[in-house]
Amino acid sequence: MSKYSLVRLMEQDGEEDGFSVGKVTYDLVVTPTNSTTEDIISALDNIDNYGIYASNIRNTSVDQAKINKEIDLHFGPSNWRKKQSLEKERGKPFPLRTNDALKDFIKKFTSKPQLLKPTVEGNTVIFKQEENPTKDFTKKLLQVVLNNAEIKYKISEKESI
Image (tube, rainbow, N blue to C red):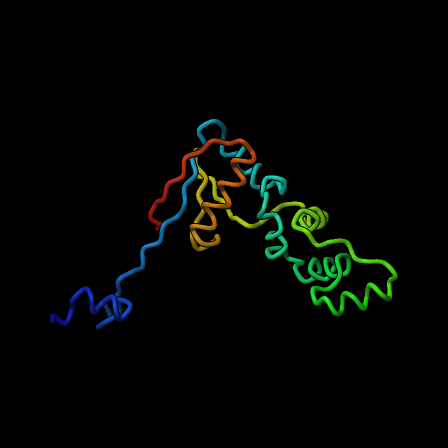
């Protein structure tokens, strides 16, 4: 086997004798077909377009701890024993913690979702891999948001520089 065989280089993460093989990453490129890049950015800024992913917004908020505390105060703690004892003290049950109720409650604290970080370049919107969630999650999220906003688009990948 050659000292510089491709398999050996890959097994050693590409580093041997000062030689490095860079890992290729791909950014997602969204091109609107029936609207503008501004429409895509506006759709991403509207929490109502996020559908099932709206509850994820609390995980990206600057005040994540504050939001989680407010959720526990409003809906009661996750631990059912603590919840039962607090309900007994209050004299009434906490509201049910459903996805819709949680989404509506979170809207009070978040004016602009920040799950994705888009960059506008010409007539496309780029989602750089290092600034956004995984490629698959970003694609799913874009599909939900843009379909809810009724924006038609093409999605492709380009090698990150």
